Amino acid sequence: MRDSSLPPHDWPELLPGWVWLCGAGPGDPGLLTLHALNALRQADVVVYDALVEPSILDWAPRAEHLYAGKRGGKPSARQRDISLKLVDLARDGKRVLRLKGGDPFVFGRGGEEAQTLIQHGVGVRIIPGISAGIGGLAYAGIPVTHRDVNQSVTFVTGHDQSGDTPGSLNWKAIAEGAQVLVIYMGMKHVDQIATALLDAGRPAEEPAAVVTEATTPRQRVLETTLGRMSADIAAAELAPPAILCIGRSVLMRQVLDWQGLLAGQPPRDLDPLGRGRPAEVS
Ligand code: SAH
Image 1 (cartoon, rainbow, N blue to C red):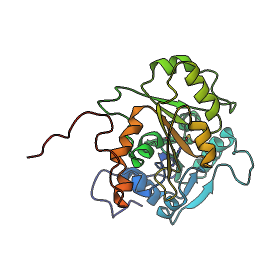
Image 2 (image 1 turned 90 degrees about the vertical axis):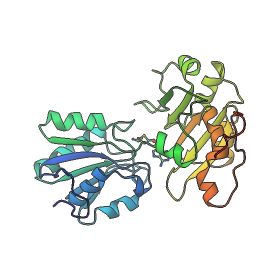
Image 3 (image 1 turned 45 degrees about the horizontal axis):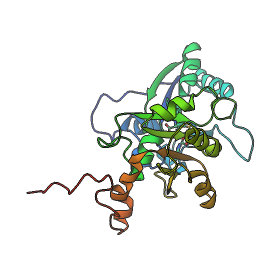
Image 4 (image 1 turned 180 degrees about the vertical axis):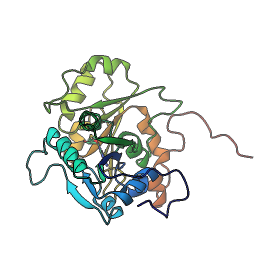
């Protein structure tokens, strides 16, 4: 059943036996794509992760909602089990929507799930989503690129498959080469990560920000420095999910905190990068 509330377009039909692997964005339902909405309206079953904001499921009222994540302190459902569950649902002739937080191909194991589905001959469509490391920072008033700050962004995960800080990462090279660093899953090992970056020569006073539950009504933003980040996170009792951002782009929040502006707080500094007076508007 296609969604008649969407304007005419060649909207794809979610066919029985197919799995669409879809990003739900970081939280705010307004950040869903139209393809995601089209999928939510057609699915028989939505298999969702812990990071999918619950209110997003309201957009799929006629579908069964199946949780595939951590619950009650139990370990997450094993990745292989989730992938095979998707294969089973597809083989039962269901229209399956696999909904993942952010973008399914950014630190989300979407690639593994899609590969398993294709290996089992299941039809797949990929629907990208807004990744927390971009959209979440934008909601905090932090642009991941800014002409006066950076010509590159480095996205890093603070966990590897074993759950440790990724030993496979060359932190010295990252410290030397990354202009702005955006770290996913970094809370557990924030102390080690900050120490590795400091040891490799990043300045302790480098601006840093932590955005938890970005784009949800519970969003919190901490502005700090690389040297103080770990202690400040503990003092503020911040909890995951969080995006860490290290770099001078964080300073832009002093002028671009648009949610603060909405709440009536004036900008703290109209020119935090010291570029001089704003151009005259005639
Ligand atoms: N595929 C997701 C990332 C999954 S990895 C994406 O593209 O966004 C899980 C990590 O993503 C979390 O540990 C956290 O670092 C980050 N994350 C996801 N949603 C978030 C949110 N709403 N606020 C802050 N961080 C978030």
